[in-house]
Image (cartoon, rainbow, N blue to C red):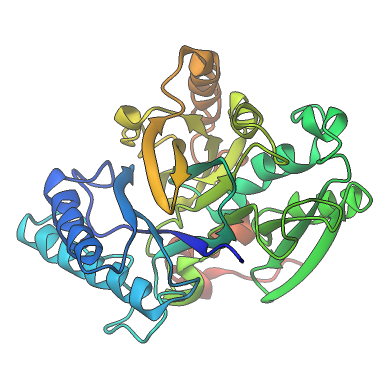
Length: 373
């Protein structure tokens, strides 16, 4: 008899920051929990967890409705709307800023909130890590996802675990041209790197097992949100703050291999006004508030075991002194790049500044440029 599949959906939105773009008030999380608990009682959800990364409200849900379920997406949208009303009462900054349309139309994709969800057959032991970033863009996951599933210097299992030895398949999206390509690694590794190194255009969306794996090849083992607020709103309304779900162990990278890439505070785009490069800091939940220059960008990792569809957790995976050095390095890098002020490479290159508020400034100077002979 075929096992019933479980779906895990991680949906996030900035519905109001406190203060400014720093963190999420407890009242908003309480309102979200109220809606989630009601849905669980009514049988729509198997389990849920309400978290926050910086000023983003995070809804992690397990259910049997499959991906792109109007019921689940509608629940998330209504929850964000209810939390927005609380944010407005408290006059929080940017109340409802990620809710870019007036009414839910059956699918939350393209409406502002970010989403990562996957449907899969639950294994005998099913560890899952939910990553949540603040003050950065979807391409910020390119580096760690590559390291986890394609770099033998990071993931020893690619070398010594025969189940993983043949590698994985990467689904890469061109988020500007709205195209996708599937690349098999390690044989197409250099092609993969040629694309995902340009993280503002090419973004890893999903990772799949190969045909030789005992895992179903059509069930993803990692998925990343790729929603771009600018492309939906047509103007700068904030950074995208991506999320990701990564399964681990038993034919997949171990939990420690999944976390290892974040020992390097690599550079990402975003930070203040979505206009600067800076280090991403792996932090415990209690340090996810963004303060210095509205940042620096940071990532939290919530660990779970899935048992009969229930998300058993939450383990705060970066609440570990093993990541203290990465945090110290990140602070040094932040000092160094901040010293550049409005100059590149701290400020993003011109082509990326097109997606910020800079074009509004340049309009004032349009008529003053003259030709140079």
